[in-house]
Amino acid sequence: MDLARVGFGVAALLLSVTAPLQLSASETQWRHAIAVLGEPKLPSNFKHLPYVNADAPKGGELRLSDEGTFDSFNPLIDKGTPAAGIASVFDTLMRQSEDEVSVTYGLLAEALSYPEDLSSVTFRLRPEAKWADGQPVLPEDVIFSFNGAKHHSTLYASYYRHVISAEKTGDREVTFRFDEKNNRELPSIVGDFSILPKHWWEGKDAQGRQRDISRTTLEPLMGSGPYKIAAFQPGSTIRYELRDDYWAKDLPINIGQNNFKVITHTYFSDADVEFEAFRAGTLDYYQEQSSSRWATRYDFAAVKDGLVIRESLPNPFRATGIMQAMVPNMRREIFKDPRVREALNYAFDFEDLNKNLAYGGLKRVDSYFWGTELASSGLPQGRELEMLEALKDKVPSQVFTTPYTNPVGGDPQKVRDNLRKAIALLKEAGWELKGNRMVNSKTGQPMSFEILLSSPSFERSVLPYVASLKKIGVDARVRTVDASQYINRTRSFDYDVIWVVWAQTMNPGNEQANYWGSQSVDTAGSRNYAGISDPAVDQLIGMINTAPSREEQVAAVKALDRVLLANHFVVPLFYSGETKIAYWNRLTHPQELPTYGIGFPDIWWSKSVAQ
Image (cartoon, rainbow, N blue to C red):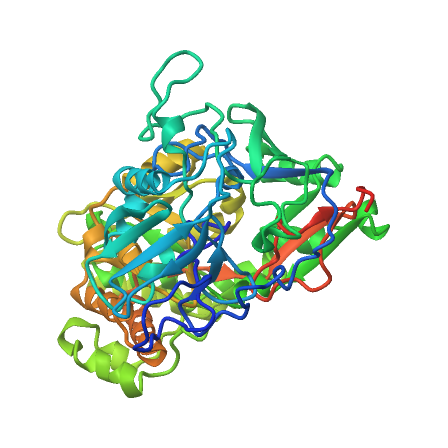
């Protein structure tokens, strides 16, 4: 399952209290929650989530910022750029706990049930669930939303490819059926997409035009969620207001949450301008992405006076694996040879970048599940080794002989050695250095490619890499485009190299095929940005999805990690392993934040509101 802001896309949800998904032979029963791993912590009569302030006051305004632009409010399709915060307009069947891994509790659904073989899951909707116009949320709405998402989104189509139908099976019941059994993840993930009102979408807008769920729209949508769209300027700002008549405001899952009366998002095209707006006090909250700015730019008066608070929080990364990388597109002939891709890694001097640009605040990523127990290390052993040996003729031999490590630079001698190694690898792959240019030995064509970026903020990290590549005769160029152009080009795989972040949960599953599977390599809009089509990778993804135990799942994930690394599909970059946030002291949050998140903005509140 996939997560969060940094590139984090679709999230995982759902759980069960008295029994986890390792089912007994007992009769199928209704449950208030579902857990993919272990058991839910909270009983069916819980009063509120343990990490919220149940008495948090409601009111005040939260002013946020985003980089780029938006041109749509439709949350279920691949077209356009959805507005930040749009998910707050809609409810989902289940809602995730940030204190547990892959555990969700009922929201629109008051209960769920599933058979012992996990071939389906049925959700029973709450009778009190209402749309903003007062009409009840019905199974037909769930079916309409699911079909719309699966038919009009490549991401959802891949994520839910094993969900073959959604059917009304009772006045308040909807059943999802699967084409495979004993996949512990499937009953969980169908609870996490936004539910849209069928009757609203089948109506007409104020100009008499028929609404169409397959298209982008800037008509303020109606939902069943806690917020409504109150005002907006296309591409620039959007203002949400808390609904006084929100049907679920007193549900235990929502107590202590949705505390701001107004949430406003303002878009910026430049990260430095965005930061200056925060520093001036026109924004309330800022999540820092630059380690150098974190180290050098927070010496202004408001910080010294305690008006701006800074926190570095590891919470979101305790159960989130990160691969941040520059990704060569293997759909381009130039990158098909793994020796070329490996050479690109030898040209990247992380140690120098970390010292001079990030003040030592970064760590090099060396796993697709970096920072978690799922990351491979050393040489494979035990069950993991058995899995790889069964694929011996399909995986690089170094998987069995050489632990993966990134090249180490940082001083002139190491850098020279690394560049010599890069040149040697390129020579093996049919390239040679002639004068100051790297050219193809057969065609004489120079090695030249474009690194496509979505924000100028990435340039300071990429330009030193471009200079390093130039030393070995490689002509790499940086091109930064606006958000909409970047999205369109990445969806159609129209790039040479891009900067990507993949986030992984502790329960990898169906999304792995969307990331690395052969079936997604030619599917526009998939996250198989590298263009991976590898039989060993496909088999390991299948083993992850059907693993009968956690031990078997972990072994398969680590084996997959090794194969991905050994093929040098990406140039691993870096991460800090902490969420760096700064906020004006008019905001506050519970003293103890959830184990696996920071609860922003859901469980935060405004100090200016009288309690």
